[in-house]
Image (cartoon, rainbow, N blue to C red; front, side, top):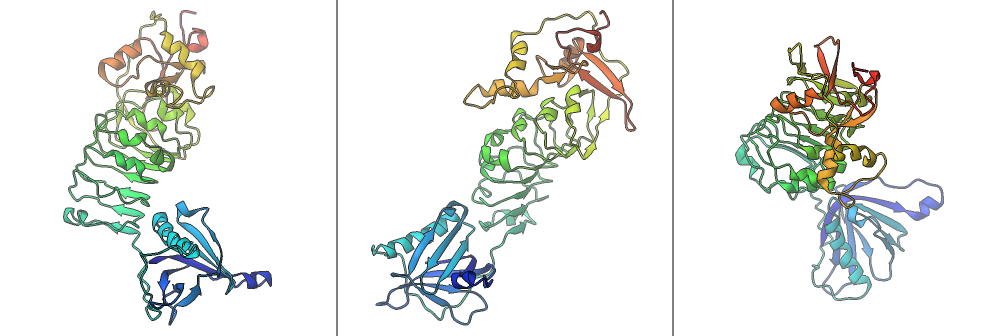
Amino acid sequence: MKISAKIEVSNRNHACLGSNMKKRAVYSTLSIGKVSRTGDFKILYCTKSMVSPKQYTIKNNVEKVFTKFIKEGKATIRFKCPPEDIIIAHDDGRTLMSFLTILMKVLKNEPVHTTHVLNPQDTKVPSKPKTALVVDSLKEYWFEFPRTLVSLVASNIGLDDIANKVRPLLQLRVLDLSKNIISELPEYLGNLPLSELNLSQNELNYKSNWNWMKRPCIQKTLNKLVLNQNKMIKLPPLLYKFHNLTELYLSGSHLVTVPTWLCTSFTNLRVLDLSGNEMVFLPASFQDLRNIDRLNPPSMSQSDELPFDPDSRAFPSLKSLAAKYVFPERYKLSNKSCPESLIVYLYSCINYCKCGRRSYTLDSPLAGSQLRLEAQGSWFDTFGSPCARVWILYQPCLSRTKQCGDQSV
């Protein structure tokens, strides 16, 4: 069996003498098998610069095999003679595990039927695997992708369904599907360790299938999400789980307002682009975005007056009253401790009163009549901005003091 990986050879004797003879990791090959049909098992190590491969005897010559990080594709084989350590960093942990399984069978004198006779004159080292790919046409998209891809760009090719083409790419970090006609995304997308995902200029909306956002893998790794120029109207509630987001682009997505959890969940957010959206108001929880380095604000509605009923005294629901006592600041919420619908409610309905206290709304004001109903029980304030006049939505708390904006006190 032969594997190709980044391999580093370290001589332990030189390390004891204080000499740094540690060779840097280079893309090389390791082969395991018999040098002749009657010979012993050996490991052959070969790089592109070698005239002939270096041979390591296995029987009674392997001191230890380090496999603590085998799932990450890392392992070390320690030989007695010569006193060297072969440090392996493979892209696929499963392939490396198969190689080490054969090695362990040889060490235990167990029968091995999967190896072949090695040719010491075979010094061919395959080229370094491809890690980035740009797809220029829809026809090219249906070709098989190298599983070593870290970056994949399939932009402006008329793609309407990514199918299962991306599923095997378990090392993918950057995925660009912009300028296509995609309206749905498969759930397996959430199993990929993506750090950047570009879905701009597609046909996505809030009714699309967003279940891929439920997967813990992408929730932990995603740092940059681009949803520019989609017909979103409102953001999917599952987006609140992406606490590691640092860049969020929502330009021209037909948003009427932004949910309050956008401001309370993304404490690491550095870039927020809301340009190209005509909004009626912004939630008071925008004050939580203290770490923003770049904010592209939306254009605001030119309405001079919003519906407001100063005599509204509707008592909050029991659900709204109880919400402040179970918010994540006091309790660690998870799908095991409470229903997911309740977690979504807690994040989507949080806002602030003018007095600075945290309060909760019964419904998220999204558009049309919902906004009108929400405005009847809320106080508003405006502040000047170089770009536009902005309406700020406050949700009154139970105190009803002058600081809360209650004119009747």
